[in-house]
Image (cartoon, rainbow, N blue to C red; front, side):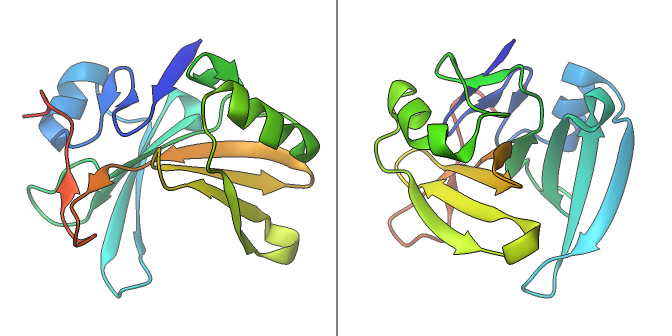
Length: 154
């Protein structure tokens, strides 16, 4: 079991880490993919644990780890297993994990549905009636532009 800590990470990965720190903590990724983002930039995704953990960096030198996505039902949030649960159980499990602001934000029909917690920097993706993954994001400053990385990430 690995516990996801909102605004922080999933051990050994901490938001704000450099690529070098990630490699030092977990070794070389299983694979790396680069794709375009919605803003015309590029995102570099590193895959670990057979694809059960995805790390995203902006595809520029010196970028920091900006999100962590977990696909494994062994990943918990505040000790509560949510990945793999039925959609009907998501609100109750979120409350058990001390997430009280979970909101439905987007419906992509066959692709799935998105639920987010702004207070915790978390996103849950639901497909075919089950939670399939969770993503952790950093806190942002009042402008919403600058990430506030956890302490100890340098």
